[in-house]
Length: 244
Image 1 (cartoon, helix red, strand yellow):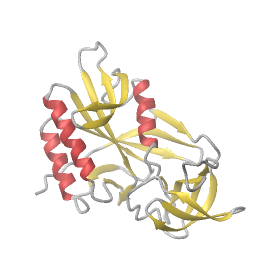
Image 2 (cartoon, rainbow, N blue to C red; image 1 turned 180 degrees about the horizontal axis):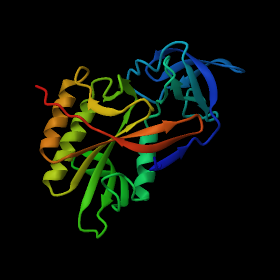
Image 3 (cartoon, one colour; image 1 turned 90 degrees about the vertical axis):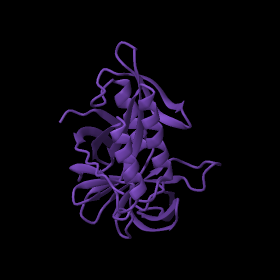
Image 4 (cartoon, rainbow, N blue to C red; image 1 turned 45 degrees about the vertical axis):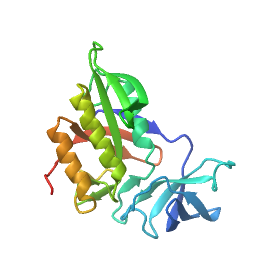
């Protein structure tokens, strides 16, 4: 499968063992030389099969900073089934931007990158693209997916009112004459298809169905992962089911 985009970690990651998550944004990790350290968790979700005590993990040592409580960030975790997952929610946006700058996002091939963090309506949208001849624009909202059950990638893994707001904004953009795309980037390699997690957030599932009925496009891409890089590599089917 031809790679769509690549993101290389800026530093060599350090292998360790996940111990616990005492706070939402903090994990305790055992490293071979440093012992038990605190690491920043760059993800607000529950991460039920990744943040399990004893799981192999990798952290990024970004160095001391007056704006951070710890110099480490938890980047990768391997599940007990051996599946590698990335929990850094900033990386999907970076991958999407790299793909957009190469005009290589599936279904948007040839569309040109114009801006990121673009304000439209009452939200900031991750990407703004324009058509090859500049006559039309497209808004692309990117979501990080880290949860998979029986080959089903699912989002969200906790209730997301912000995600519902973003879908409403995309639907409004479509009504205004733009292309509107909800892009899910699955940061693990065991996913064959995608669906909204209706058991976790039925309102988000309902908002997906409404947005789809109003012309919003839904796209899911999966990654190949290693402690060196993430490769955005392929499209998987999206299944939306009416709920409520």
